[in-house]
Image (cartoon, rainbow, N blue to C red; front, side):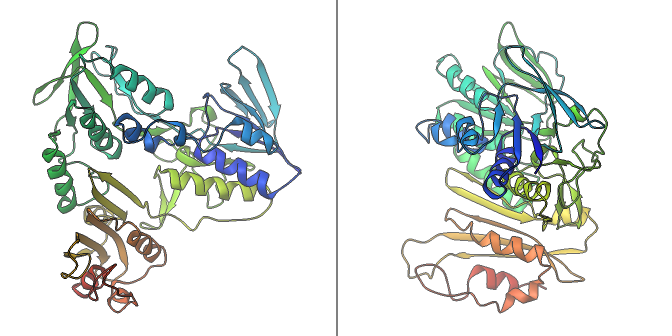
Length: 443
């Protein structure tokens, strides 16, 4: 049996710890985490801030006590400050100053990611906030009790930025989103879909200011204004939602890295050093859409990578089947769901890509309570293989994306969908449903 050290205990770390303890008895599992809590579902922060849930309690699904009951030894608020890979030693220091020196047989790095914080003039003013950790959200919620905070600027129009914009608007704040791209959610959807979200934000009085870069923040004590290359915006609070970078500094150059600094791992999650594995946001994934290594930081990817690493460190070889980057967002009832490549990304990756679009009612027209669904399927004109899919509706059509995710993984062609056995019942869909119709319209 092995002595296994896990550094980091959020989604990837928790998944790997549970998998080891649930499936392989006799191993010694030691965990170091810099935070004071485990398994915080950051994706629920906007719901908490926007008062759509009563509190944060349900945003945690594990804790130190649960993992220790299973047999792990957990050290919270104990960051690792050095790793000697040659001698297989880990060095950490607790909040009370206690020093820890532990040897390992296997090491799993689950160090996660860090918010990108650009050096901008005035960045040290009060009320310029990050929203990643539980403590960040707690701080923002506490500050929102101050009635003088009326204008909030969110820097970044990705998923987190848009979700937080909705949350602040639900708190009756004046909200502006600023982004350098020409639209919101540009990494996940083509313009035909991002335009729907733009309209949704506008209809709820959220201002989206694109093609702009923040030059500086101004104020006396706390932030009062955001200055961009195109304008000036009042701000009593600023949220930096620019993105994240992998937290890989602990390796100190000893491990091979991807171009963005993530630990480069194989399909078993092993790094460039034997017996050292990396999982979650600090590591790469295998991206089936481009048949190559990539970086896609999602909680679902983190959990899967944790499970894979756990089995491998315990002697059961298990390889990833790869990912498609499946994702979704729901803003004031508008649901956007996607997987794989957008048309823009497909063309940028060298595919001779084409799309087929269709829009229809979810159910037959005689059903009085009905919803429109918009679908786009991206495919390769040469091979006909499906590369991506996007859906939009105020109906929950999210389950359809799982089929497209598997289709991309298995290299299914668009033509296979044309006569796919899809059931019909008026309660659920149309006999000529939107998936069939989109496939039939493919050139």
